[in-house]
Image (cartoon, rainbow, N blue to C red; front, side):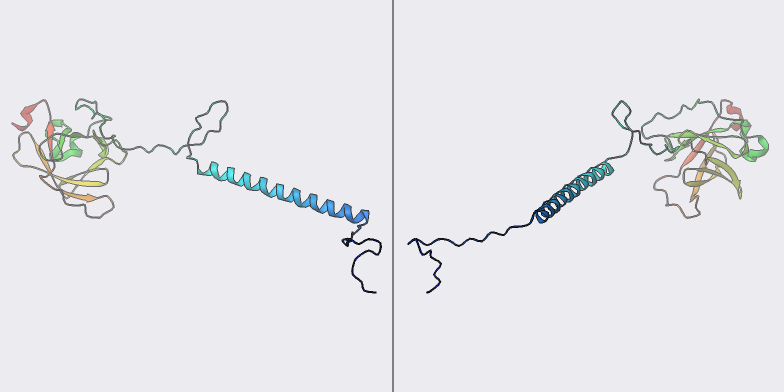
Length: 214
């Protein structure tokens, strides 16, 4: 007799099926393993969402929070004391000076009757500011309010320092009113400054008593 897979009592072929019966403890283990895998997948998904939200917060610009009601306030960098803003009005030529004026012994041949304020003409013609010589080498300037503004004598020249440059100034003999010319500029770090284009910078004395220069 051949094994044809057909039943002996029917003319139609019957499919052969095989069922695998697992014991109850094994089925419980499979279900537990599937649950653990599902929980692990959900946990990884939640962690990826949290990292994405943290990265988005880090990319936001720092500053003060615009929202109210206890929003987190981020500290801003401290402002830097700087020069007069471009376009801001220049202090008046009549602005009171700070501190005591430089004495006659300090100024020497620059004493000129005790007048201490000079008009500053960057292009040698148009007034664009002023400087004022105060005691102990302090310089007050309309276009620079930094603490580094100062003056001193060096080799007979008046050295006016503000910003990043030393300005070496010489009085022009016989000028009326008294005038100085900036003959040289040097950077405060010792390097040579770029040559100035156009006319030399000049300064012109401001003094109500014109008798001091005849």
